[in-house]
Each structure stands twice: as C-alpha cells, then as structure tokens.
Amino acid sequence: MPEVSIILPVRDQENDVASLVRAAVRVEEHVDARGEPVTVEILALDERSGDNTLSVLSVLHGQIANLRTLQDVEPGSGIRRAAKVARGEVWLILDHAIDADLAGWAVTQVLRGQRAAFVPGELLALDRELGHSLLKHTGGLVSAQNLLRKHLKAIGEPAAFSPAPDGSAKARAKRLLRGGLGRLGLGRFDRP
Image (cartoon, rainbow, N blue to C red; front, side, top):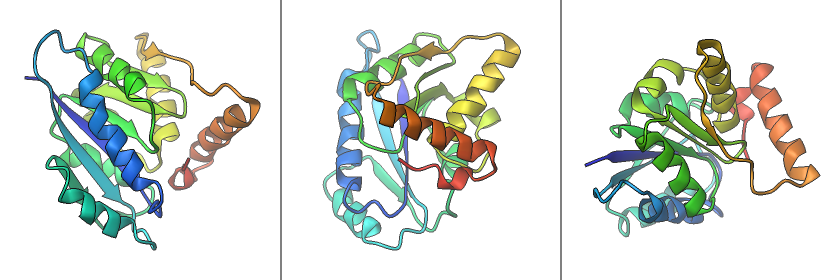
C-alpha cells in the first residue's frame, strides 16, 4: 500500500491553514495508484507562527485523524525538518491550497516511476530517497524546486513537469521573486 507524506510548511497563516489542510486531504482521492489503496499522512510544520495558526491546526486535529503538527520549527527549516520525520514513499510539498487534481497528478507521476514531479511555485512531489538526499536546505517550496531541478539536470534525469495554472504576469513575477530569494541565501522568506 503506497504511503504519501504531504508536507505543509506554515507560518502566520491562520486565515489560510484550514483550506490548505483540507486541500491536502482531498489529494488522496485524486491519486491513481492502479487500484491499490493509498494512505496519506499530513505533516503541518509550524515555523513559529505569531498568530493563531497553531490554534486552527489544533481544531483540525479533532477532524482529521492523519494530521500531525510539528511546532516550534525554526523559520525556513520546515522542509528540512519534514525530511527527517516523513514516513511516506512519496512526498508532496505544498505551501498554499492548490487544485487536488494537480497534486494527484504529481503524486501519481512519482508512484509510476518518475523521481520527481513539480509545478513551478505550486507543488513538488518526489520519492523518499531523493527527499532524504536533497532536502537538507533552509528555504521553502520554490527553493526546493530549484535545488531539485539543478540536481536532476546534473545527473541527466528528467522530472515530470506541468506549467503553473496561473500564467499571469503577476504570478510569474511572484514565482521569480520567490526563486531568487533562495539563490540569495534568503530562502526562509520563500512564502506564497
């Protein structure tokens, strides 16, 4: 039975964290594991939120059995911390609510043999082995995507890729800015 770890680095997202967790719950329905049941663990990593993000997550724990929250995570290190505790054979990293079909596509690609699948600025799915070896950085989703792209290019291995659903100039500029923060050593500020 394939297991998927959905990694949610959050910080000061009390208004959005419930929709993010609920979007993560819906991913399971959109994964094509060729008839095999899929189990999902949802890891919410709170990077020292100063608002009520933890309170919202606490309420969600009563509603979602497979939700685990890690508290007091150093800002910018949520993905690195998740790489130490995630149990799934496929990891899906999200930092904002996204379309469950798109997330299901990415997880399905990895279950079918791709090492990784990504949508720029939206999500990253990768196998556990690749996650353990690469995700030792400080930074967010876009920083992890850039690191993955560089690694796979160096070894000549392709990743499954889908363009971001929002192709507006504003969305492209935001993704470019987020990616640049990691290259400048400011990956901890890589936020949607």
